[in-house]
Amino acid sequence: MEKNIAVLSGDGIGPEVINQSLRVLDAIGTKYDHKFIYHNCLIGGISIEKTGIPISKSTLDTCLECDSILFGAIGNPKFENSKIRPEQGLLKLRKKMGVYCNIRPIKVYKKLFKISPIKKKYIENVDFIIYRELTNGIYFGKKGLSLNQTKAYDVCNYEKKTISRIATAAFKAAVKRKKKVTLVDKANVLETSRLWRETLKEIHLNLNLNFKEVQLDYLFIDNASMQMIFNPQKFDILLTDNMFGDILSDEASAITGSLGLIPSSSIGKKTPMYEPIHGSYPQAAGKNIANPLGSILSVAMMLEDFGMKKESFLIKKAVNNSIKNGVSTKDLNPKYSFSTKEVGDFLINYIINN
Ligand code: IPM
Ligand code: MN
Image (cartoon, rainbow, N blue to C red; front, side, top):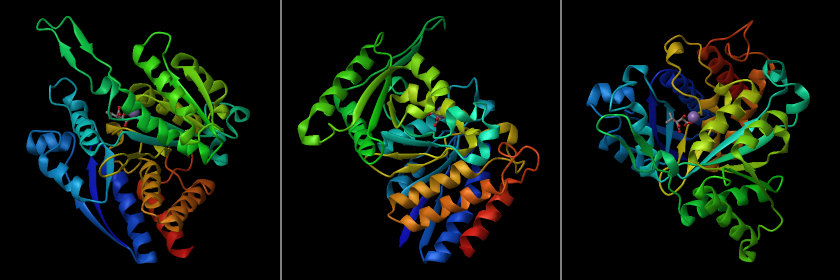
């Protein structure tokens, strides 16, 4: 197969982790005779520095023409107080690609139980997926700051149709798994949350959709944050809005032991995107210490969506093996850590020989 991939490394540790992802992808390409063609584009702080804006039309056009987007990380403290911010580039990209469905799998590794802040008995069988709505809600509502800078607002918008499409995706995923959807919201306070509940109830009961066998639960966000620590094994598909999904996914990553481990895919109307859930981690940039696994596992999700099942499986197997053997960066193996590139070397070697 031949695939065109837009590569948006972005800021901080983005370029380093993407580098390892591309090496892994090349190894897969060689082994299975696929041609991956990379199109490097600017986004984020680096784009502001070079072009004055966080994402240009040329980046957006390239992304629209490609089969997928590999995204690294975004954010630079240098722009903390400026009006033009790196993050605006990512939000614009998500909106333009229409990738409303963000999928973040949370899975634990035996070898890492000891670095999780949570006791083994609570996390042994953790295996759930966060379905985060990605192109609406408070991130994209009207916002403003008064002239004297003493008042500000951010509006949270949802419509039945923008809730339905991600809810349907979540139910479909649940049917193939443990048949459970948990909606996380704040329906005791927020009107948008009540609309989410209403919409979900309708979808659940719609006989044409065949979701009746799926168990549908509701949790308030404050309660869900607690249950994620005390009882994370209860979740299967956790469905939530843009802001709650952002917060809960960082919390969920802590269960696994590291934010650096979690990949994601974002699917919707146009080109799908694949990105680790971590940020740009500027303190580590350029030091060859960042964990590349979040990005590399995002590549595995991308290959799966391309229909390259055995290729995707081999990457996951290589990752499992590296963790099992302690060939990991400092976040996973504080005592005998390996560099970002050494982790990549191990994975490539494994892919070639297995
Ligand atoms: C994420 C990130 C982004 C978000 C930031 C960088 C805008 O935290 O993908 O989780 O909030 O969506
Ligand atoms: Mn986040």
